[in-house]
Image 1 (cartoon, rainbow, N blue to C red):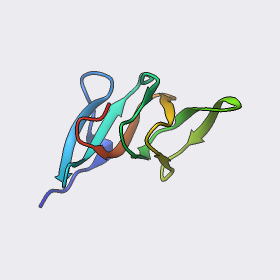
Image 2: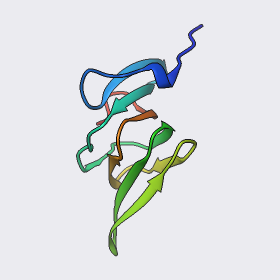
Image 3: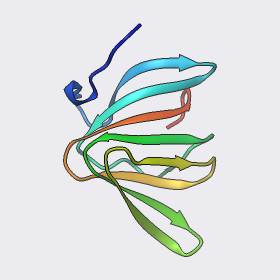
Image 4: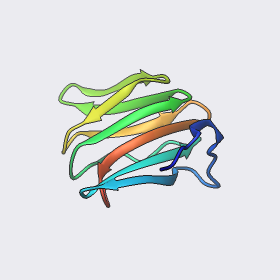
Amino acid sequence: MTIVEAKAFRGQFAWEALDIASIDGVTVRLHWTDQPYIWHVNDGPEVFVVLDGIVDMQVRTADGEISHRLTPGSVFHAEQGDAHRAVPNGEVRALVIERAGSI
């Protein structure tokens, strides 16, 4: 068993991750960052849970780019093929659940 205090985790570089679990080819990772992530499209679904901080999750739709403000407790779900990127407002800790090896 493991207990992780998310607020205590601070990476040495943006998007550094602490591996929590690997379950049937799916990873559960705690990420720390203070920098935006790249625009990307996952090869499978992704669940992004803000544990600490504020994230503007930018998504691309047929109507253009839209930004959603995520606060602690917010859950973002992207399906395979959904273009998105996370832009933190200061330090952020987020739990990311996705297929192993996904970007």
